[in-house]
Image (cartoon, rainbow, N blue to C red):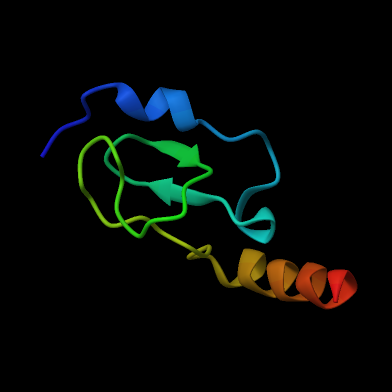
Length: 66
């Protein structure tokens, strides 16, 4: 699967995972998308950070919001 370029239409502004954005590893772009798969390439979207430091930061930010 490869990027067809249609994902640019759903490109998200900064804020990332805390604001409900998801990342496509194939297209290398953050999307504001409700589904679990990229609308462009069909690859599964990442819904959270991989790095432990950023996971902790995200959990703290979610607690502040609630």
